Length: 273
Ligand code: 2AM
Ligand code: CA
Image 1 (cartoon, rainbow, N blue to C red):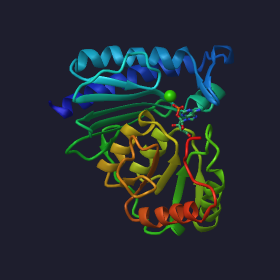
Image 2: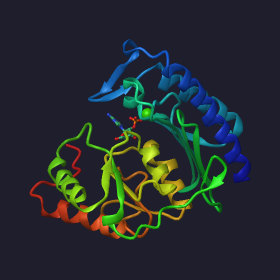
Image 3: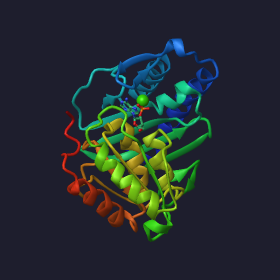
């Protein structure tokens, strides 16, 4: 498997789907929105984009199976797995906020091999493959060099569906508001991770994400010299539903803040109840 060639092909697939999404952004009407579950929105745009991506990737690499947000293709077994979110930041898309992305990751026997995040309206394509430095529109990128939380800009996502761990989360936010340069909530985990990879953000954390929100972006952070973990410190951040990403210099400090606030609360976190 020549990952460099595959990466070029996946970038083209992401950009083609992105062009369709961009076209639809200017035509979009709220009547097209369906509600999958609380605050979980979808439209024909997500579904059509996913079908486009899946069809093209099947031709590019027929052996690989799929794990996709919109489930337009049945999950099957293979050593190779595409993990796809055709439109990460759907709520932004629907509300006319121009920050959303196509996210395509590839893993082999559980190990990330390739990731592409295409931020559509800025025409910024973040990509990485095993053995190579992450890139933004073909140019190498790296994480920031800020050493302390005090100097850092931190991204996060607010809870949107499961609210039992809000007290712990608010404590962490309160600490970060008072002890960092600031906090941003962009609304697309794939974009948050990509911005961490190129040094715009120094760190990012969020609860309750799905593998398709984070797989590609997390790998791009890794290949840009950053580090990732779950809130326990373990490395199950793609399937573990919680993620902390950073430049490697501030990860420990950020993890400590999160862990401290989680353990001092009376409620258990992330119980999915
Ligand atoms: P999405 O736009 O593909 O759903 C921002 O907080 C992150 O959470 C985004 O990556 C977003 O991905 C995801 N997200 C937001 N609302 C969501 C919901 N109701 N269900 C699942 N994921 C959601
Ligand atoms: Ca999505």
